[in-house]
Image 1 (cartoon, rainbow over the protein chains, first blue to last red):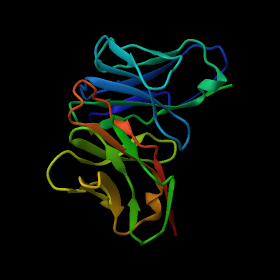
Image 2: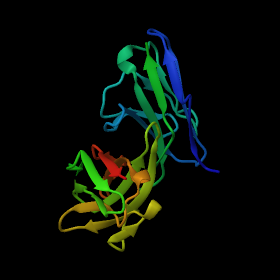
Image 3: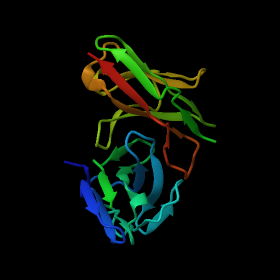
Image 4: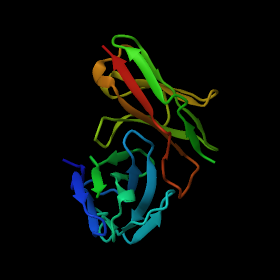
Length: 111
Length: 116
């Protein structure tokens, strides 16, 4: 079944650690997105990609980086996690002009 | 510039009563409009969309929305609310004339609480 997967679902990590949040989709969508969302709050676009080897920063400045080496894979990396990075991270993909499909999210806590 | 407004942070409704969650938008061209729902600790789930055609759009879980071009609105409605409808609802828009700017513009979200 076509879907979008995020791992891990929950992550608690110490300050200064390097982390990578995984996002993969099986729908063949060209466009992929990363959003940051605090609980019950608005969505903030932090990165997006319109295809392989294409990545752009979003509306909210983020210390994270992304890569798009394969169509189906769009990982997000934090080189040195800080408590201010504690949030939920949502990955989404889309095709053409229509809506997005979201993963279940990764809830990150940096202690 | 594209924008979306959800004027209510929270909507409270009694179970069995009709519910409305409001959304207005601003785009330069024709709008593509969407509603999503988010349950606690989950990603967003697609509810319905308006691209073209009938102004009344029916979606998942008994929800519907009416596109009103003159009022630039796309309010989400349900005739009879369920406690399980309690969640965070997001409206989003994309301008059909956006060209290479294919991102959705999101509202801030409305928290719906359905009381038993």
